Length: 218
Length: 218
Image (cartoon, rainbow over all chains, first blue to last red; front, side):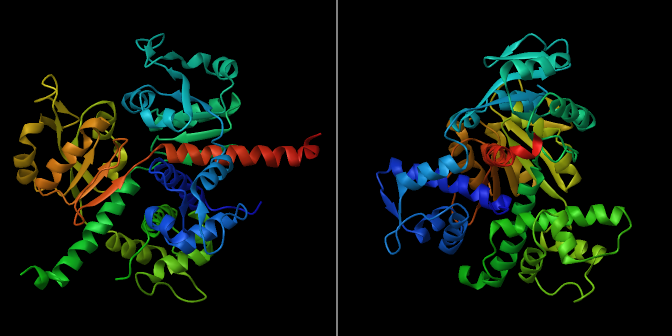
């Protein structure tokens, strides 16, 4: 398989959500242009992204929504549920323990860890908070492969090392620091300020646009 | 200005971070290929993205890191600080009130709102939690243009309407629901499960890859 850009994967998830919405509305067929429009990209982009994974749809007709959705589900590995461990039950961690979207999209947080004695042993939204000292055995016990890091920046590398040692294969890092992991481990660093910068960009250029065309509003 | 894809804006933010790191290391010049490598995309992509905004760098030499960084900062509208309001001081909201990255990248949460009487009037990380009933006056008082929604899904649309009415121009929505806003308002819906789906994809195909080449490990 060719090296596939991260952005392609993200768009595949978005196409999947758009297709679900279309199926709920009883729409059976969609063109790449229409799908692109709903996914906020071009039809060309849709077609190009899909060619990474095979041949879909019928030229001049479009895609069968249910077929394409089921193919994308398989491509993303979302035809099964994933068990997830969460490390760091602070504000962000607690928010994720009750985050409806994770469960809805097939991710079950099955165990969580913290170093704070006042939290250890408690159950939060059906998930036990265990002592971080028991991380390795617990990861093994649950057979978890994916972990979410929501500890403060200064502890994140240590936690990441411990996760890798315990057999975790993929990490979603929310600590505001860059983590080093062995090449065999997949890591995604989530930087929520990127989203705010996009807003800043659009606000800045919207203003320019508004003043340029302000006579329209006179 | 041509319609610029969202992904381009996100990559501009990432280039900016890479350039900062290079400047800290005392690196003055970088080629588009090297910059792409550090930003996890191709040199062609870097060059293509930058052409949306003008002519940068010197052919055969590369970009001056400090010049490019300062240009991107201006393009993103990050040459000033932005005031931000946050609505919903639950777990996720509280996490954001103390999120180091927002401040670091120029976003100051100056006021927050909740409907819970036990929270109203408290100060969290130097930010006052006000009654949501005072939202309109407060947004005006602080002159805020950007808001973050961290309320439960069922209240998000109502909150969004109230923000728009109060003059908010850009919204970052973390509630797991799609919000309707007038065209003049910019909205970004953050779906953190997309990140987990990317991990699922890479884990799924990594496994295929691992078994395909498993003889290498015998």
